[in-house]
Length: 465
Image 1 (cartoon, one colour):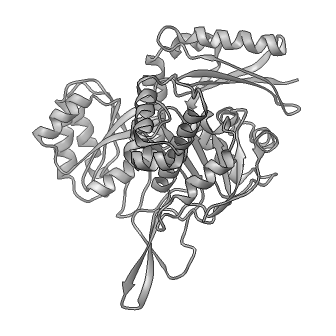
Image 2: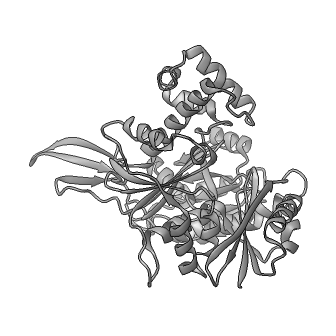
């Protein structure tokens, strides 16, 4: 037996999965509360004891971990053009454990600097200008950021002609400085992966260790990546397969949590019709979005604000006052579990609304336009309407008694312009193995792919019209 231990330090639970690489098979799993407030190794040791009680003592070849226990990186981006800055920053952050909470465009003003001082982000992405293009704005912003209070890292990934001078200016301040190639070297051409890799490294070195994971190093061989990056790797492997075994093809991942709703897509999402015109920046094959205002507990109020109390009341069959009272209760007491059928129906309405809204935000849109050649369609973002596989995870979905109906209603409630799936097969990560398989993806891809195919069960197909 060749055993390996895979660990996910989650914000709530530390989850362990023991795998035999030679079989391959899952030997056992266990979890315990993540003790990030005290010493994170305590929760790990509790989970290890529970795992050993179930499997007996195992000698592991390696112990590998991913983590979202730091809560992710709050990232701010400063650039030249508002729309381009926001899109490039979000795509660079999508799999790196970061979420973009604010973007600034053009030259930073006194008001902007005051906001930045209040925010104190975990990382600032400084970009702007194509290579050889505008340098004035990024140099102005570098000089202003250098004098800003705080010691958050600054990643310079803009016009390469100005990069060295930006670094020189920033090194006069208190912020650690990192560099990456321009996220937009040419107009409407993105190069986000180098910046995303630097963001991942900052996450690992600065944020995870600052949250106490350094004390758990004696129990580990390494913290390889943020949990979102691990899940993305797993889904990409499940979609594309290996050189020896085919994957499942294009797919979407849905992770409904207490604080956020994360959507993943592994698909090109190109126009399905020759009469459709693409607009906007290109989308990556593997994409993740984080909806920080949509969560079953910590952000239940965000779901209500997104869809309205009336919609939640209609979905749950309850009156608006009861729905609003329950949402406030969930938001203030996130440990709440539904205690009766009425609360279960309101939880169901929250889940439908969160998933539906998050999918619509992640997918592209299609609108009819009129051109000199006649009527055509204009697509922005990914066309996911033909994707036939959806993988779901997160307690609110995994433990739902009517998961198929929840997902069907979430997709049926889309606007006509949203390019979300029309019909798809539903797979459920009941064993919470996606992050663990992402840790194996680079070194033991064949094992990870086989285990995912064997363990992630398929439900009946559902249709969304």
